[in-house]
Structures are given as C-alpha cells and as structure tokens.
Length: 114
Image 1 (cartoon, rainbow, N blue to C red):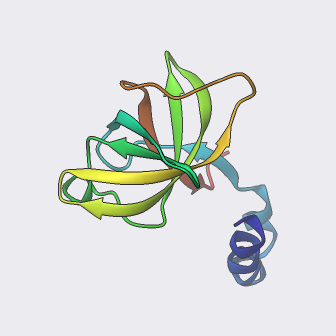
Image 2 (image 1 turned 45 degrees about the vertical axis):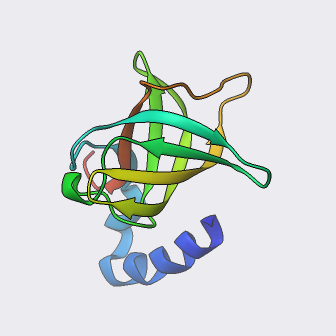
C-alpha cells in the first residue's frame, strides 16, 4: 500500500518542488463523519461495517483513521460502498487495541498547512 502511495506522490513532489516536502499528514473531516456499526469476523480478515457511505462522501480506496475519545486506534481501507453504508479492511491497529461499534471514522487526507 505505502509503496504505491509513494509512487503516486513522487511526481507531485517533483512538480511542486520543495514545498511539497513540508506537507504534513493530518486527519480532516472533509466528508461526513462515520461510525463503526459492527465488526464482521471472517476467516481471512475482519470486515468493519460503517454507518455512512457514498452519500456522506466516502469513496472506495480511501484510507480512514479510527478513533475513540479522541485517541487514534488505527487505519481502515474502504473496500465496498453503498449509499448509506461502507465496508472496510483494517490496515493498522494500535497494539492492544480493538475496534468497537461507535468508534469514530474520518478520512485521512494530506494537508500542506504548516
């Protein structure tokens, strides 16, 4: 996943110059907030079901952060979208953490703010 992201970002850095190197990664709520609705424990991987989808601005392939009480828990990859629901795979989870219904989900975006 990350090698693909880096491959996509290299041309952007080359075109924009050194200012792109100072870009920071931040979490922004540019789309409607979603909540974890349930976790489907399947054989190959757990599937996280969200209570928001296309109508909230979510799109397949977006990477999202999951948090509880303002503390980041991990990252999700949106894999299937419906108008008012989405399915995601867990990309990363903080050590000792697990996801629960009600956890907050926000799209992870790059920002050039300083």
